[in-house]
Structure formats: C-alpha cells, structure tokens
Length: 272
Image (cartoon, rainbow, N blue to C red):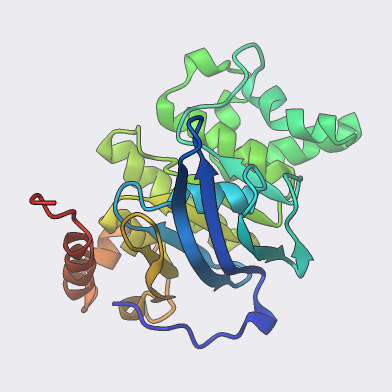
C-alpha cells in the first residue's frame, strides 16, 4: 500500500525530525505521547496522519500548528523553525469555528482584516475563496442558516484566504453525514488541483485516507511512533475527482486490507 519515501528532506516543504512529546500531569506523572516522529511533506502534497485512537496524531498536528511545543526534535516549514503559531499555518478543526454574528463573507474576511489587508482587497479575495468552496450564493448568510458541510466550507475558505503555507486539518469531516462527507472530500481534491495548497490532515477513516492521501503516515498505538510512511502506491501519483474512481482502481482493495491489518496489529491485548 505504502512504501518508504524516496524523497529527501532537502526538497521538503515541511520537515518533522525526531519529534517527541511528553506531557506532565497535575500529579507529576509523565505521559509519553509520541516518540521519535520523523517525516516530510512536499509542496502541494496531501499528507494523511493515520493510526489507532490515542496514538498522538492530533498531538503532532498541534505541534506543527505551534499550539504545542515538542519535548524533543524539531519541525521546519519552508526551512524555518516552527516556534509557535503564525499565519503560515492554518488550522481547520472538527468543530465548526465560524463567528455566528458574521455573514459568510465577513467570516472569510475576518483573518485578512486582522492582518491589515485593505477592505477592497479583502472583499475581492473573500469572493474568490467563497467561490472556490462553492458558497457564492450564500455569502450573505449567517452560520445558523447553513448546514454542517457548508459551515466547514466557510472554515476552509477563511483559512485559505489567509494564504497559509500549509493547511492543517484535524478530523474536519468527522461530524458530517456520509453524503456530505464524500462531497467535502471531493471538494478538497478540487482545491488541491486548482491551488498550490499543501495539506496535513488527521483522520481515523481508512477509506478517506486512501481517497484523499497522496502520502500516508501511519502511527503505532500509544506512545505513537511511525510504522509506515510513503506514497499511496496504487494511485500512481494520480488524484481522482470522483470518489468512486478511486474505489475501482486495481490495488485499492489490497491497500485497504493492508491498512486494516496495520490497525488490527495495534489493538490492545484484552488480556493486558
């Protein structure tokens, strides 16, 4: 399904190098969340962080965002050390994060306004990104008037409008119904094909990982380490605009079985 990457870090957009994270609880107990995590992501690549629940995927994503700092190792974006949150890393969460009192248009403009973008330029850029996520007819609507999928499209448009160097997504479609979810997945493929966006996304969904991912980084169970990292081989570098296209490609079933076997290998022993 996936194989060791042949790409060197010299050409990578994002480098995660020997990263570990230890949390100290209130009682002084130290919890090792992830250990010696290393992988790289190329420009315009869709990288999936996949693995069993509790393996530290979201912790790694939060460290890339600068919301948590590594206990060891380092992370580089465009050769610059990640030392905290900044506008070069945009985050989309599972929970809807739109401002209820602002219209779709004003939500998308919000980050640009905070960054001092002039009003005319804000409106023009907001219109472009609202069109990109197919919400032009709803630009004057408020979040309470939108479906869950539409709210996530607002969040994606608002994040992309700030022109982040990498888009980080933490289970962004987990709360959506099945039809809306695959529509959102196809939208993300469309966005990557029409922009220079680089994405790192956490998911538990194997089918979602195989459809969206150019690369999959598979984590072991807690404490998280990397079991496998590499391109999704059966796709041969292609992206499919329609989800059913991916399901019909030779090698898809074998890839799904391989990941399921990895997942099963990381299940805790019920006798432990």
